[in-house]
Structures are given as C-alpha cells and as structure tokens.
Image (cartoon, rainbow, N blue to C red; front, side, top):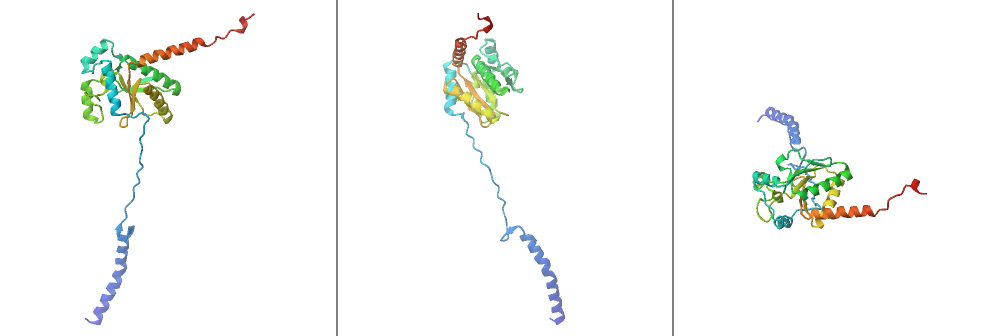
Length: 248
C-alpha cells in the first residue's frame, strides 16, 4: 500500500468517527447499561369492607323466611298478576321521599305489604335527615326473569335452591347507593344494621351492583305497630300547656 492510499484511509476514518459516536449516544440515551429502562406503575389497592356484608348464610335465612311464610316463588307474569289481583303484592308509589328507577318496568314495581311499610318508614326517615329521596332499583321478580338475569350477571342469585333470590317472593327490594355521600351511607348502614340485629331484615351492600339488597321479614309490621303505639303513649304522657290568660 502506497503512503498516499494509507493517508486517504486514515482521513476517512477520522471523518466517520464523530458520526458513529453520535449514533451510539442516541441509541443508549435513556438506557442503563445498554438496556431499556422499565417505567414502574404504582397501583392503589382499594379495600372493600362494608358494614353489611352478604353471605351464603344470609341467603339461606332469607329462603327460610319465605318457607316459614309459605310464600310462592313467582313463576311468570301470569302468576305475578294473580298475586296482584289478590292484593298479596302491592304497588310501590312514588312520593317526595321515595323514588323508583325509571328503567324498572311498571309490572315489576310491586312488593309485599310489609316490605312497603319498611320502604315508607326508611324513606321518610332518610328524607327528614337529608332532604333527599331514596330510590328503589329493583323489587319483585319472576323465576323466568331471574333465569334470564343470570345469563348476563354471573353474580345474580339462582332461581331455585336454598340460596335462591328472595326477589322471587316479593319481599325484597334493592335500594340505590349511587350518588350517596359518605355521611348518608353511614346513616343508612346504621339504620339497616339496627333492624338486622332485631332479625327484621336481611341486608347486604352489594359490591358489583351499586345497591343495598334488603329482604324484609313479615315480623316488621308487628315491630312497626309497637313503635307507633310507644310513640303515641309518649305523646299522651306529655303535660299540656295551659294558656295563662284563662287562669283566674
């Protein structure tokens, strides 16, 4: 190799060196030891610990109450209409303190009379405290409807067996918890828990559906009447005020 060719090669290598360094720098930028760095993603764990937790035992107790009362599990719309005609199921009327979800069919806005008594008491107490109504999202269902529901909601209770849905007997309602404040939910938890401890209801805050599931025992009407009589007795025991102008 002549000195001229050797000099030409050295000049070319000198010119290419800065370009190679720039490419190497670009490839290794933002890496560690030539390996791409992984961005760490932090996940916040959400704990769900409701005051009113549903259970297998609760579902069994609900069905035991249905059997104790010898109530029918409502098969279909014809069976439902028959119970309505016999006034074994009553309509849930909307009031200033009680709303019914707009998507709940007119033929499904029914429940047992004592369940309606519970709804009226609960809604009036809630409205007196917060000046806002509660909402019923679901009430009576038929076996046919429950079977269809289970196709789209794997968490729905079965239509038969010891853990069958108590909606099928008309003594259960679902109360919406969507939009409730922490204070309102705390109040509702306390209200329902007190009645549950008296074995008057079976309540559960559902996790996958934004509702409280509440089965009302037929014993609620007796409890309610006792409360009314106690309130009346307390009112009659209070001394009446005498108008001073009528005194001699």
